Length: 363
Image (cartoon, rainbow, N blue to C red; front, side, top):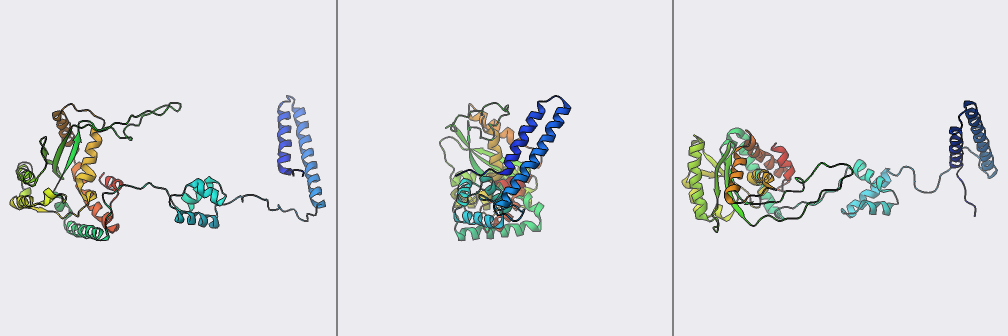
């Protein structure tokens, strides 16, 4: 069986040969002669090929359909086939789709991104798999708070005091993002060795409002936060407010803290009432609605990542230095992002709010 040669590819090879020979000739007259020979040879072979085709029974000059893949595969039919594969298996690889449909991986990419508007995302960790009832409670509380805030947003945010506890290590390894370096194109990738946070750490409880930090407490080594300990903290908080925020107690204080046991026990509730505070409703399992968790602590630990502290005093000095050197509006923006969190939670029917969305809204 003889192999059929494509006339076009055959002529292309002749053209390349003639061009190569023409470039090797220095005389312009000889170059013109070679170009004329190329034109005559091309026309002659084209006529011969056409005659052969008509002798075989061809009756028109239109191109006949060729076997193999179609030139254009990103059509509606192929796009629908790709969509069906994605619906069947959301984790299916591009190479598997291309093999199943007998098209190139580039075509699959084009269909997925340009025609179907899809992208592949990794799953994100959430604190808890919320039930429908828990989502309903979150959405209901957010709607109540948003309605109350909309009446007088500025004054509402001004009277909020928020708090939470966090571990701060003597050494916390820098993140992968922080380890990026500028290198040359031929340079190898920098190496980063796996390390663990140090065992030495401090438990810090921070109370803050729109203007800055009101109170920082460090839990003594060997102790745990109990209802009695937290009620004493609330008494100290009132003293700090009187010293740093004149008139704030008169306007009223809305205390925003999570529903941990020490925050809701009998002693803590009595301390809230004794100091004239009111507690802002906060749904359970909702760190995405706590300003310290979604704003203050991530920014603080980002600053401390990769640094080594030899003692508790050195660590607390660095922590307090960072908290007090933040620019005007930093804390205000962090609390103001609460309205975005409440709105987004309602839009998601009580689902968790993305951290990236909260950070961008607080800038």
